[in-house]
Amino acid sequence: MRLNKMVYCMMAAATVFAASCSDFDDYNEAYVTGNAESKLSLWENISGNPELSQFSELLKKGGYDEVLNSPRFYTVWAPKNGTISDYSSLMAMSKDSLVDRFIKNHIANYNYNISETGERRVYTLNDKSMILDNGTYAGLTIDPKFKNVPSVNGILHVIDGYAEYHPNLYEYIFEAGVDSLSKYFKHFQYDYFDAAKSVIGPIDSLGRQTYSDSVIVKRNRLTYNGGLINAELANEDSTYTLLIPTDEAYKNAYETVKKYYRYPSSNEIKYKPITSEGVGKEQVVQVKSDTQTDSIARIQIARTLVFSHGNTYNSSLPENDVLEGSYQDKGDTLCSSYNYYLSNGMDFIKKHTVGEVRTQSNGYARLIDSLAVYSWDVWCPGVSVDLFGQKASQEVYPFSASCQPPTIKRIDNNYRAEYWPYERYLSLEPIGNNSKPEIYFNMSGIRAASYGVYIILLPDSLNRESSENKVTQFDVDISYMGEDGKIKSWGFTKLKAFEGDAKNKINIVKVQNPKGVSTDADKTITFPYAYVSTTAKPYLHMKINRNNYSSTEKNYSQTLRIAGIILVPVEYEEYLTNKE
Image 1 (cartoon, one colour):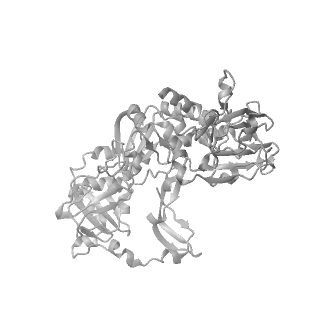
Image 2 (cartoon, one colour):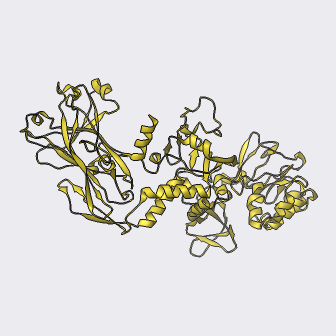
Image 3 (cartoon, one colour):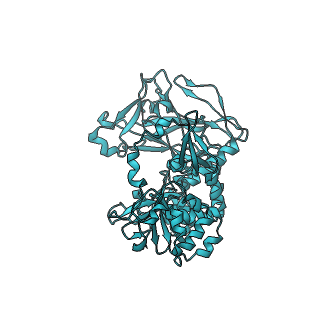
Protein backbone atom coordinates (compact mmCIF):
# COMPACT_ATOMS: atom_id res chain seq x y z
CA MET A 1 0.00 0.00 0.00
CA ARG A 2 1.46 3.37 -1.01
CA LEU A 3 0.67 6.70 0.69
CA ASN A 4 0.41 9.97 -1.26
CA LYS A 5 1.71 12.16 1.54
CA MET A 6 5.25 11.98 2.86
CA VAL A 7 5.92 9.66 5.76
CA TYR A 8 8.63 10.66 8.22
CA CYS A 9 11.00 8.08 9.60
CA MET A 10 13.02 8.98 12.72
CA MET A 11 16.51 8.07 11.64
CA ALA A 12 19.69 10.11 11.34
CA ALA A 13 20.78 11.17 7.89
CA ALA A 14 24.20 9.77 8.56
CA THR A 15 22.69 6.30 8.95
CA VAL A 16 20.92 6.50 5.62
CA PHE A 17 24.05 7.39 3.71
CA ALA A 18 26.51 5.30 5.72
CA ALA A 19 26.61 2.61 3.03
CA SER A 20 28.67 3.46 -0.01
CA CYS A 21 26.66 4.25 -3.11
CA SER A 22 29.10 2.17 -5.11
CA ASP A 23 27.53 -0.95 -3.60
CA PHE A 24 24.44 -0.32 -5.71
CA ASP A 25 26.03 1.00 -8.90
CA ASP A 26 25.69 -2.28 -10.77
CA TYR A 27 21.98 -2.39 -10.11
CA ASN A 28 21.10 1.27 -10.63
CA GLU A 29 22.85 2.07 -13.92
CA ALA A 30 20.92 1.62 -17.13
CA TYR A 31 22.29 -0.57 -19.91
CA VAL A 32 23.29 2.51 -21.95
CA THR A 33 23.45 2.52 -25.74
CA GLY A 34 23.15 5.22 -28.32
CA ASN A 35 19.55 4.20 -29.06
CA ALA A 36 16.74 6.71 -28.81
CA GLU A 37 15.00 4.45 -26.29
CA SER A 38 17.69 5.18 -23.73
CA LYS A 39 16.45 8.78 -23.53
CA LEU A 40 12.88 7.71 -22.78
CA SER A 41 11.29 6.46 -19.56
CA LEU A 42 10.15 2.87 -19.14
CA TRP A 43 6.55 3.98 -19.52
CA GLU A 44 7.31 5.84 -22.74
CA ASN A 45 9.13 2.81 -24.19
CA ILE A 46 6.28 0.48 -23.21
CA SER A 47 3.37 2.69 -24.29
CA GLY A 48 5.16 3.54 -27.56
CA ASN A 49 5.52 -0.13 -28.54
CA PRO A 50 2.39 -1.31 -30.47
CA GLU A 51 3.12 -4.94 -29.45
CA LEU A 52 2.71 -3.98 -25.78
CA SER A 53 -0.62 -2.13 -25.95
CA GLN A 54 -2.45 -4.64 -23.75
CA PHE A 55 0.27 -4.48 -21.12
CA SER A 56 0.17 -0.66 -21.34
CA GLU A 57 -3.57 -0.63 -20.64
CA LEU A 58 -3.12 -2.85 -17.61
CA LEU A 59 -0.28 -0.67 -16.30
CA LYS A 60 -2.39 2.45 -16.74
CA LYS A 61 -5.34 0.93 -14.90
CA GLY A 62 -3.05 0.06 -11.99
CA GLY A 63 -1.50 3.54 -11.88
CA TYR A 64 1.88 2.25 -12.98
CA ASP A 65 2.10 4.64 -15.91
CA GLU A 66 3.13 7.19 -13.29
CA VAL A 67 5.38 4.77 -11.38
CA LEU A 68 7.32 3.84 -14.53
CA ASN A 69 7.69 7.51 -15.40
CA SER A 70 9.31 8.23 -12.04
CA PRO A 71 13.09 8.49 -11.50
CA ARG A 72 13.22 5.24 -9.52
CA PHE A 73 15.09 2.45 -11.32
CA TYR A 74 13.26 -0.74 -12.33
CA THR A 75 13.56 -3.77 -14.59
CA VAL A 76 10.33 -4.65 -16.44
CA TRP A 77 9.39 -7.88 -18.21
CA ALA A 78 6.54 -6.92 -20.56
CA PRO A 79 4.21 -9.58 -22.04
CA LYS A 80 3.45 -9.24 -25.76
CA ASN A 81 -0.06 -8.71 -27.08
CA GLY A 82 -1.94 -11.97 -27.51
CA THR A 83 0.06 -13.82 -24.83
CA ILE A 84 -2.01 -12.58 -21.90
CA SER A 85 -4.75 -15.20 -21.98
CA ASP A 86 -6.59 -13.67 -18.99
CA TYR A 87 -6.51 -10.13 -20.35
CA SER A 88 -10.28 -9.55 -19.99
CA SER A 89 -10.28 -10.99 -16.45
CA LEU A 90 -7.31 -8.86 -15.50
CA MET A 91 -8.99 -5.71 -16.79
CA ALA A 92 -12.03 -6.60 -14.68
CA MET A 93 -9.97 -6.91 -11.50
CA SER A 94 -9.88 -4.28 -8.81
CA LYS A 95 -6.92 -1.93 -9.01
CA ASP A 96 -5.23 -3.35 -5.89
CA SER A 97 -5.61 -6.97 -7.01
CA LEU A 98 -4.34 -6.14 -10.51
CA VAL A 99 -1.26 -4.46 -9.07
CA ASP A 100 -0.43 -7.21 -6.58
CA ARG A 101 -1.26 -10.23 -8.72
CA PHE A 102 -0.13 -9.12 -12.18
CA ILE A 103 1.76 -5.86 -12.52
CA LYS A 104 4.20 -6.40 -9.64
CA ASN A 105 4.85 -9.93 -10.90
CA HIS A 106 6.60 -8.36 -13.92
CA ILE A 107 8.65 -5.62 -12.25
CA ALA A 108 11.71 -5.73 -10.01
CA ASN A 109 13.90 -3.12 -8.40
CA TYR A 110 17.36 -2.53 -9.86
CA ASN A 111 19.03 -3.61 -13.08
CA TYR A 112 18.71 -7.14 -14.45
CA ASN A 113 20.24 -7.09 -17.91
CA ILE A 114 20.72 -10.22 -19.99
CA SER A 115 24.43 -9.76 -20.67
CA GLU A 116 25.22 -11.81 -17.58
CA THR A 117 25.43 -15.59 -17.84
CA GLY A 118 23.97 -18.17 -15.54
CA GLU A 119 20.75 -18.53 -13.63
CA ARG A 120 19.69 -15.82 -11.18
CA ARG A 121 16.85 -15.42 -8.75
CA VAL A 122 14.76 -12.27 -9.10
CA TYR A 123 12.52 -10.92 -6.36
CA THR A 124 9.68 -8.94 -7.88
CA LEU A 125 7.88 -5.98 -6.31
CA ASN A 126 5.35 -8.34 -4.71
CA ASP A 127 8.24 -10.39 -3.26
CA LYS A 128 7.69 -13.34 -5.54
CA SER A 129 10.74 -15.35 -6.53
CA MET A 130 11.36 -15.75 -10.28
CA ILE A 131 14.20 -17.48 -12.13
CA LEU A 132 16.02 -15.43 -14.77
CA ASP A 133 18.58 -16.81 -17.17
CA ASN A 134 19.93 -15.71 -20.54
CA GLY A 135 16.80 -16.57 -22.50
CA THR A 136 13.88 -16.91 -20.09
CA TYR A 137 12.09 -15.23 -17.21
CA ALA A 138 9.89 -17.44 -15.01
CA GLY A 139 10.12 -20.06 -17.76
CA LEU A 140 8.90 -17.60 -20.44
CA THR A 141 11.00 -16.85 -23.52
CA ILE A 142 12.52 -13.38 -23.69
CA ASP A 143 12.27 -11.92 -27.20
CA PRO A 144 15.89 -11.55 -28.37
CA LYS A 145 14.91 -8.47 -30.44
CA PHE A 146 13.50 -6.74 -27.37
CA LYS A 147 15.83 -7.51 -24.52
CA ASN A 148 17.93 -5.03 -22.57
CA VAL A 149 15.95 -2.11 -23.97
CA PRO A 150 17.54 0.84 -22.15
CA SER A 151 15.49 3.58 -20.53
CA VAL A 152 16.40 6.56 -18.41
CA ASN A 153 14.93 4.82 -15.37
CA GLY A 154 15.49 1.14 -16.06
CA ILE A 155 15.69 -1.84 -18.37
CA LEU A 156 12.89 -3.37 -20.45
CA HIS A 157 12.57 -6.95 -21.68
CA VAL A 158 9.69 -8.30 -23.78
CA ILE A 159 8.44 -11.83 -23.02
CA ASP A 160 6.18 -14.34 -24.77
CA GLY A 161 3.53 -14.91 -22.13
CA TYR A 162 2.99 -13.63 -18.61
CA ALA A 163 4.21 -14.78 -15.21
CA GLU A 164 1.32 -16.41 -13.39
CA TYR A 165 0.71 -15.35 -9.84
CA HIS A 166 0.88 -18.03 -7.15
CA PRO A 167 -0.03 -16.96 -3.61
CA ASN A 168 2.21 -18.04 -0.78
CA LEU A 169 0.73 -20.04 2.06
CA TYR A 170 0.10 -16.97 4.18
CA GLU A 171 -1.85 -15.29 1.36
CA TYR A 172 -3.73 -18.50 0.65
CA ILE A 173 -5.13 -18.60 4.18
CA PHE A 174 -7.31 -15.62 3.21
CA GLU A 175 -8.31 -17.18 -0.13
CA ALA A 176 -9.18 -20.71 0.97
CA GLY A 177 -12.73 -19.81 1.93
CA VAL A 178 -12.30 -20.90 5.55
CA ASP A 179 -13.48 -18.07 7.78
CA SER A 180 -12.41 -19.48 11.16
CA LEU A 181 -8.71 -19.67 10.37
CA SER A 182 -8.52 -16.50 8.28
CA LYS A 183 -10.23 -14.43 11.00
CA TYR A 184 -7.79 -15.72 13.58
CA PHE A 185 -4.75 -14.89 11.44
CA LYS A 186 -6.14 -11.49 10.51
CA HIS A 187 -6.41 -10.62 14.21
CA PHE A 188 -2.58 -10.63 14.39
CA GLN A 189 -1.99 -8.66 11.18
CA TYR A 190 -0.60 -5.13 11.29
CA ASP A 191 0.74 -2.44 8.93
CA TYR A 192 4.50 -1.88 8.78
CA PHE A 193 6.38 0.94 7.06
CA ASP A 194 9.02 -0.68 4.83
CA ALA A 195 11.83 1.85 4.45
CA ALA A 196 13.84 -0.44 2.15
CA LYS A 197 11.06 -0.44 -0.45
CA SER A 198 10.17 3.23 -0.12
CA VAL A 199 11.53 6.10 -2.21
CA ILE A 200 13.84 8.31 -0.17
CA GLY A 201 13.07 12.02 -0.11
CA PRO A 202 15.03 14.95 1.35
CA ILE A 203 16.15 15.39 4.96
CA ASP A 204 13.84 17.87 6.68
CA SER A 205 14.86 20.85 8.79
CA LEU A 206 14.98 18.69 11.94
CA GLY A 207 17.38 16.20 10.39
CA ARG A 208 14.72 13.56 9.82
CA GLN A 209 14.60 11.37 6.73
CA THR A 210 11.48 11.81 4.62
CA TYR A 211 10.09 9.54 1.93
CA SER A 212 8.44 10.81 -1.22
CA ASP A 213 6.83 7.42 -1.87
CA SER A 214 6.19 5.29 1.22
CA VAL A 215 5.45 1.58 1.14
CA ILE A 216 3.29 0.01 3.83
CA VAL A 217 3.33 -3.79 4.01
CA LYS A 218 1.31 -6.31 6.00
CA ARG A 219 3.05 -8.24 8.76
CA ASN A 220 1.67 -10.80 11.16
CA ARG A 221 2.74 -11.55 14.72
CA LEU A 222 1.94 -15.23 14.18
CA THR A 223 4.36 -15.65 11.29
CA TYR A 224 6.80 -12.73 10.88
CA ASN A 225 10.35 -13.90 11.70
CA GLY A 226 8.81 -17.16 12.85
CA GLY A 227 6.35 -15.43 15.15
CA LEU A 228 4.09 -17.20 17.63
CA ILE A 229 3.87 -20.37 15.52
CA ASN A 230 7.52 -20.44 14.42
CA ALA A 231 6.69 -20.56 10.71
CA GLU A 232 7.39 -17.85 8.11
CA LEU A 233 4.45 -18.60 5.87
CA ALA A 234 5.07 -15.50 3.74
CA ASN A 235 8.71 -16.42 3.08
CA GLU A 236 9.04 -17.40 -0.58
CA ASP A 237 12.30 -19.26 0.10
CA SER A 238 10.75 -21.71 2.57
CA THR A 239 8.73 -24.84 1.90
CA TYR A 240 5.90 -25.91 4.20
CA THR A 241 2.80 -28.04 4.28
CA LEU A 242 -0.09 -26.09 5.79
CA LEU A 243 -3.23 -27.73 7.14
CA ILE A 244 -6.38 -25.63 6.81
CA PRO A 245 -9.26 -27.02 8.89
CA THR A 246 -12.74 -26.51 7.50
CA ASP A 247 -14.91 -24.26 9.63
CA GLU A 248 -16.59 -27.32 11.12
CA ALA A 249 -13.24 -29.00 11.83
CA TYR A 250 -11.91 -25.82 13.43
CA LYS A 251 -15.02 -25.50 15.63
CA ASN A 252 -14.75 -29.13 16.78
CA ALA A 253 -11.04 -28.79 17.51
CA TYR A 254 -11.65 -25.59 19.46
CA GLU A 255 -14.32 -27.23 21.63
CA THR A 256 -11.98 -30.16 22.29
CA VAL A 257 -8.93 -28.07 23.14
CA LYS A 258 -10.58 -25.48 25.36
CA LYS A 259 -11.82 -28.05 27.88
CA TYR A 260 -8.18 -28.66 28.87
CA TYR A 261 -7.72 -24.94 29.57
CA ARG A 262 -10.63 -24.31 31.88
CA TYR A 263 -10.12 -21.69 34.58
CA PRO A 264 -12.41 -20.78 37.53
CA SER A 265 -15.36 -18.58 36.62
CA SER A 266 -14.50 -16.57 39.75
CA ASN A 267 -11.26 -15.57 37.93
CA GLU A 268 -9.32 -16.70 41.01
CA ILE A 269 -7.22 -19.83 41.36
CA LYS A 270 -5.92 -20.81 44.79
CA TYR A 271 -2.86 -22.76 45.82
CA LYS A 272 -0.49 -23.27 48.73
CA PRO A 273 3.10 -22.30 47.91
CA ILE A 274 6.01 -24.51 48.93
CA THR A 275 9.18 -23.01 50.31
CA SER A 276 12.25 -24.44 51.98
CA GLU A 277 10.37 -23.95 55.25
CA GLY A 278 7.35 -26.01 54.22
CA VAL A 279 3.79 -25.33 53.14
CA GLY A 280 2.93 -21.64 53.07
CA LYS A 281 -0.36 -19.84 53.54
CA GLU A 282 -3.04 -20.12 50.86
CA GLN A 283 -2.45 -17.73 47.95
CA VAL A 284 -4.85 -16.39 45.32
CA VAL A 285 -3.82 -15.79 41.70
CA GLN A 286 -6.01 -13.68 39.41
CA VAL A 287 -6.86 -15.13 36.00
CA LYS A 288 -9.03 -14.06 33.08
CA SER A 289 -11.04 -17.21 32.65
CA ASP A 290 -12.79 -16.85 29.29
CA THR A 291 -10.01 -14.80 27.67
CA GLN A 292 -7.22 -17.17 28.67
CA THR A 293 -9.18 -20.25 27.62
CA ASP A 294 -9.98 -18.78 24.21
CA SER A 295 -6.49 -17.44 23.57
CA ILE A 296 -4.67 -20.62 24.54
CA ALA A 297 -7.04 -22.93 22.67
CA ARG A 298 -6.68 -20.99 19.42
CA ILE A 299 -2.89 -20.67 19.53
CA GLN A 300 -2.62 -24.38 20.33
CA ILE A 301 -4.60 -25.18 17.19
CA ALA A 302 -2.47 -22.85 15.05
CA ARG A 303 0.74 -24.45 16.31
CA THR A 304 -0.30 -27.86 14.96
CA LEU A 305 -1.03 -26.74 11.38
CA VAL A 306 2.38 -26.05 9.79
CA PHE A 307 5.09 -28.57 8.88
CA SER A 308 8.48 -27.54 7.52
CA HIS A 309 9.85 -29.71 4.73
CA GLY A 310 13.33 -29.17 6.16
CA ASN A 311 12.48 -31.19 9.27
CA THR A 312 13.56 -34.82 9.07
CA TYR A 313 10.36 -36.01 10.73
CA ASN A 314 8.36 -34.63 7.81
CA SER A 315 10.22 -36.48 5.08
CA SER A 316 7.28 -38.86 4.73
CA LEU A 317 4.98 -36.07 3.53
CA PRO A 318 4.04 -36.99 -0.08
CA GLU A 319 4.94 -33.50 -1.32
CA ASN A 320 8.34 -33.45 0.40
CA ASP A 321 10.54 -33.89 -2.67
CA VAL A 322 13.89 -34.87 -1.14
CA LEU A 323 16.72 -37.00 -2.41
CA GLU A 324 16.40 -40.63 -1.43
CA GLY A 325 18.40 -41.30 1.68
CA SER A 326 18.76 -37.62 2.53
CA TYR A 327 16.29 -37.83 5.38
CA GLN A 328 15.43 -40.44 7.92
CA ASP A 329 11.88 -41.65 7.41
CA LYS A 330 10.11 -41.25 10.74
CA GLY A 331 7.01 -43.13 9.63
CA ASP A 332 3.74 -41.80 10.95
CA THR A 333 5.21 -39.11 13.21
CA LEU A 334 5.21 -35.52 11.98
CA CYS A 335 6.75 -32.52 13.70
CA SER A 336 4.99 -29.16 13.50
CA SER A 337 6.92 -25.93 13.08
CA TYR A 338 6.41 -25.34 16.80
CA ASN A 339 8.02 -28.71 17.60
CA TYR A 340 4.83 -30.51 18.48
CA TYR A 341 5.38 -34.17 17.64
CA LEU A 342 2.22 -35.76 16.26
CA SER A 343 2.60 -39.52 16.57
CA ASN A 344 -0.35 -40.17 14.24
CA GLY A 345 0.44 -37.25 11.93
CA MET A 346 0.60 -38.96 8.54
CA ASP A 347 -2.35 -41.19 9.37
CA PHE A 348 -4.74 -38.34 10.20
CA ILE A 349 -3.53 -36.24 7.24
CA LYS A 350 -4.19 -39.08 4.81
CA LYS A 351 -7.63 -39.80 6.26
CA HIS A 352 -8.83 -36.24 6.64
CA THR A 353 -7.51 -34.34 3.60
CA VAL A 354 -10.41 -33.00 1.51
CA GLY A 355 -9.92 -32.78 -2.25
CA GLU A 356 -6.62 -32.16 -4.00
CA VAL A 357 -3.52 -30.75 -2.39
CA ARG A 358 -3.23 -27.06 -3.35
CA THR A 359 0.24 -26.09 -4.60
CA GLN A 360 1.33 -22.58 -3.59
CA SER A 361 4.49 -20.57 -4.21
CA ASN A 362 6.20 -21.78 -1.04
CA GLY A 363 4.57 -25.08 -0.26
CA TYR A 364 1.35 -27.02 -0.14
CA ALA A 365 -2.05 -26.48 1.45
CA ARG A 366 -4.29 -29.33 2.58
CA LEU A 367 -7.91 -28.73 3.49
CA ILE A 368 -8.79 -31.11 6.34
CA ASP A 369 -12.19 -32.05 7.73
CA SER A 370 -10.87 -33.01 11.20
CA LEU A 371 -7.90 -32.06 13.34
CA ALA A 372 -7.73 -35.59 14.70
CA VAL A 373 -4.37 -35.41 16.48
CA TYR A 374 -3.95 -37.29 19.73
CA SER A 375 -4.75 -35.01 22.66
CA TRP A 376 -1.73 -36.20 24.65
CA ASP A 377 0.63 -35.15 21.84
CA VAL A 378 -0.41 -31.50 22.00
CA TRP A 379 -3.46 -30.33 23.92
CA CYS A 380 -2.90 -32.31 27.10
CA PRO A 381 0.60 -33.80 27.27
CA GLY A 382 1.96 -35.79 30.16
CA VAL A 383 3.54 -33.87 33.03
CA SER A 384 7.02 -34.78 34.21
CA VAL A 385 8.33 -33.09 37.35
CA ASP A 386 11.70 -31.51 36.64
CA LEU A 387 13.99 -33.26 39.11
CA PHE A 388 17.30 -32.43 37.46
CA GLY A 389 16.91 -29.55 35.00
CA GLN A 390 17.01 -25.77 35.25
CA LYS A 391 13.66 -25.60 37.04
CA ALA A 392 14.56 -28.23 39.64
CA SER A 393 15.59 -25.63 42.22
CA GLN A 394 12.12 -24.08 41.85
CA GLU A 395 10.17 -27.34 41.93
CA VAL A 396 11.90 -29.56 44.49
CA TYR A 397 11.67 -28.71 48.19
CA PRO A 398 12.88 -30.94 51.09
CA PHE A 399 11.10 -30.42 54.37
CA SER A 400 12.22 -32.42 57.36
CA ALA A 401 14.70 -31.90 60.13
CA SER A 402 15.56 -35.57 60.06
CA CYS A 403 16.86 -35.98 56.51
CA GLN A 404 19.75 -34.79 54.42
CA PRO A 405 19.17 -32.21 51.70
CA PRO A 406 18.26 -33.96 48.45
CA THR A 407 21.17 -34.67 46.13
CA ILE A 408 21.29 -35.62 42.48
CA LYS A 409 23.27 -38.79 41.93
CA ARG A 410 24.32 -40.62 38.79
CA ILE A 411 24.07 -44.33 38.22
CA ASP A 412 27.47 -45.96 37.89
CA ASN A 413 28.37 -46.68 34.25
CA ASN A 414 28.95 -50.34 35.12
CA TYR A 415 25.28 -50.78 36.04
CA ARG A 416 23.58 -48.19 33.85
CA ALA A 417 22.28 -50.81 31.42
CA GLU A 418 20.32 -52.45 34.24
CA TYR A 419 18.48 -49.19 34.97
CA TRP A 420 18.15 -47.80 31.45
CA PRO A 421 16.72 -45.31 30.49
CA TYR A 422 17.38 -43.74 33.91
CA GLU A 423 20.82 -42.24 34.43
CA ARG A 424 20.19 -40.00 37.43
CA TYR A 425 18.05 -40.02 40.51
CA LEU A 426 17.18 -37.76 43.41
CA SER A 427 18.41 -39.22 46.69
CA LEU A 428 16.79 -38.29 49.99
CA GLU A 429 18.60 -39.98 52.88
CA PRO A 430 17.70 -40.19 56.58
CA ILE A 431 19.81 -38.79 59.40
CA GLY A 432 18.92 -41.40 61.99
CA ASN A 433 17.04 -44.64 62.57
CA ASN A 434 13.77 -42.85 63.29
CA SER A 435 13.96 -40.49 60.32
CA LYS A 436 11.11 -40.32 57.84
CA PRO A 437 12.37 -38.27 54.89
CA GLU A 438 9.78 -36.27 53.04
CA ILE A 439 9.86 -33.94 50.07
CA TYR A 440 7.56 -31.57 48.15
CA PHE A 441 7.38 -31.04 44.40
CA ASN A 442 5.71 -28.16 42.58
CA MET A 443 4.09 -29.38 39.37
CA SER A 444 4.11 -27.28 36.20
CA GLY A 445 1.97 -27.79 33.11
CA ILE A 446 -1.18 -29.13 34.72
CA ARG A 447 -4.28 -28.98 32.50
CA ALA A 448 -7.91 -29.42 33.46
CA ALA A 449 -7.83 -33.18 33.05
CA SER A 450 -7.56 -36.55 34.75
CA TYR A 451 -4.14 -38.11 35.23
CA GLY A 452 -2.63 -41.33 36.47
CA VAL A 453 0.24 -40.55 38.84
CA TYR A 454 3.42 -42.64 38.63
CA ILE A 455 6.45 -42.60 40.95
CA ILE A 456 9.62 -44.21 39.58
CA LEU A 457 11.89 -45.52 42.33
CA LEU A 458 15.30 -47.17 42.28
CA PRO A 459 16.32 -49.84 44.83
CA ASP A 460 18.77 -49.99 47.74
CA SER A 461 20.96 -52.34 45.73
CA LEU A 462 21.65 -49.54 43.23
CA ASN A 463 25.35 -49.33 42.31
CA ARG A 464 25.85 -52.38 44.54
CA GLU A 465 25.63 -50.19 47.64
CA SER A 466 23.59 -52.91 49.30
CA SER A 467 23.19 -56.63 48.72
CA GLU A 468 19.45 -56.54 49.41
CA ASN A 469 16.38 -54.82 48.05
CA LYS A 470 14.44 -53.43 50.95
CA VAL A 471 10.77 -52.63 50.63
CA THR A 472 10.11 -48.90 50.41
CA GLN A 473 6.81 -47.83 51.98
CA PHE A 474 5.67 -44.27 51.44
CA ASP A 475 2.73 -41.85 51.34
CA VAL A 476 1.79 -39.55 48.47
CA ASP A 477 -0.65 -36.64 48.51
CA ILE A 478 -1.38 -33.90 45.99
CA SER A 479 -2.71 -30.44 46.89
CA TYR A 480 -4.94 -28.69 44.33
CA MET A 481 -7.98 -26.44 44.03
CA GLY A 482 -11.30 -28.24 43.82
CA GLU A 483 -14.49 -27.41 41.95
CA ASP A 484 -15.86 -25.71 45.08
CA GLY A 485 -12.93 -23.29 45.21
CA LYS A 486 -11.34 -24.95 48.23
CA ILE A 487 -7.90 -26.55 48.47
CA LYS A 488 -8.24 -30.33 48.27
CA SER A 489 -5.88 -33.19 49.03
CA TRP A 490 -5.76 -36.41 46.98
CA GLY A 491 -3.50 -39.35 47.66
CA PHE A 492 -2.90 -42.63 49.49
CA THR A 493 -0.80 -44.00 52.32
CA LYS A 494 1.48 -47.00 52.68
CA LEU A 495 2.23 -47.50 49.00
CA LYS A 496 4.97 -50.06 48.49
CA ALA A 497 7.86 -50.50 46.08
CA PHE A 498 10.10 -53.58 45.69
CA GLU A 499 7.72 -55.73 47.67
CA GLY A 500 8.10 -59.46 47.05
CA ASP A 501 10.70 -59.17 44.29
CA ALA A 502 14.29 -58.89 45.41
CA LYS A 503 15.47 -58.96 41.79
CA ASN A 504 13.41 -55.96 40.70
CA LYS A 505 15.74 -53.15 39.65
CA ILE A 506 13.15 -50.45 38.99
CA ASN A 507 9.70 -49.98 40.47
CA ILE A 508 7.12 -47.83 38.74
CA VAL A 509 4.42 -47.35 41.34
CA LYS A 510 1.03 -46.03 40.27
CA VAL A 511 -0.48 -43.93 43.03
CA GLN A 512 -3.90 -45.47 43.70
CA ASN A 513 -5.93 -47.14 46.42
CA PRO A 514 -4.00 -50.33 47.20
CA LYS A 515 -6.88 -52.01 49.04
CA GLY A 516 -9.66 -54.00 47.41
CA VAL A 517 -11.83 -52.73 44.58
CA SER A 518 -11.28 -49.04 43.89
CA THR A 519 -13.30 -46.48 41.99
CA ASP A 520 -11.98 -44.34 39.14
CA ALA A 521 -11.46 -41.52 41.64
CA ASP A 522 -9.22 -43.87 43.67
CA LYS A 523 -7.09 -44.56 40.60
CA THR A 524 -6.65 -41.13 39.05
CA ILE A 525 -6.62 -37.50 40.07
CA THR A 526 -8.85 -35.02 38.28
CA PHE A 527 -7.85 -31.36 38.21
CA PRO A 528 -11.01 -29.32 37.50
CA TYR A 529 -8.92 -26.29 36.47
CA ALA A 530 -5.79 -25.68 34.43
CA TYR A 531 -2.70 -24.13 36.00
CA VAL A 532 -0.75 -23.43 32.80
CA SER A 533 -0.29 -19.72 32.04
CA THR A 534 -0.66 -18.87 35.73
CA THR A 535 1.83 -18.56 38.58
CA ALA A 536 -0.20 -20.98 40.71
CA LYS A 537 1.06 -24.56 41.04
CA PRO A 538 -0.32 -27.63 42.73
CA TYR A 539 2.19 -29.68 44.67
CA LEU A 540 2.94 -33.35 45.27
CA HIS A 541 4.13 -34.42 48.71
CA MET A 542 6.00 -37.67 49.25
CA LYS A 543 7.04 -39.14 52.62
CA ILE A 544 8.57 -42.35 53.93
CA ASN A 545 5.99 -44.20 56.04
CA ARG A 546 7.81 -46.72 58.23
CA ASN A 547 7.10 -47.91 61.73
CA ASN A 548 10.49 -48.70 63.18
CA TYR A 549 8.81 -50.52 66.08
CA SER A 550 7.05 -52.96 63.78
CA SER A 551 8.82 -56.29 63.36
CA THR A 552 8.21 -56.05 59.61
CA GLU A 553 8.40 -52.35 58.82
CA LYS A 554 11.54 -51.72 60.87
CA ASN A 555 13.47 -53.38 58.04
CA TYR A 556 11.92 -51.21 55.33
CA SER A 557 14.13 -48.75 53.53
CA GLN A 558 14.34 -45.18 54.85
CA THR A 559 15.84 -43.74 51.66
CA LEU A 560 13.94 -42.35 48.69
CA ARG A 561 15.71 -42.77 45.35
CA ILE A 562 13.41 -41.01 42.90
CA ALA A 563 14.14 -41.33 39.16
CA GLY A 564 10.93 -39.72 37.97
CA ILE A 565 7.47 -38.41 38.81
CA ILE A 566 5.10 -38.53 35.87
CA LEU A 567 1.43 -37.65 35.44
CA VAL A 568 -0.04 -39.52 32.47
CA PRO A 569 -3.31 -38.31 30.91
CA VAL A 570 -6.04 -40.91 31.39
CA GLU A 571 -6.83 -40.73 27.66
CA TYR A 572 -3.30 -41.92 26.90
CA GLU A 573 -3.53 -44.70 29.49
CA GLU A 574 -6.74 -45.91 27.87
CA TYR A 575 -5.17 -45.72 24.41
CA LEU A 576 -2.22 -47.87 25.51
CA THR A 577 -4.53 -50.38 27.20
CA ASN A 578 -6.71 -50.73 24.09
CA LYS A 579 -3.66 -50.94 21.85
CA GLU A 580 -2.35 -53.92 23.80
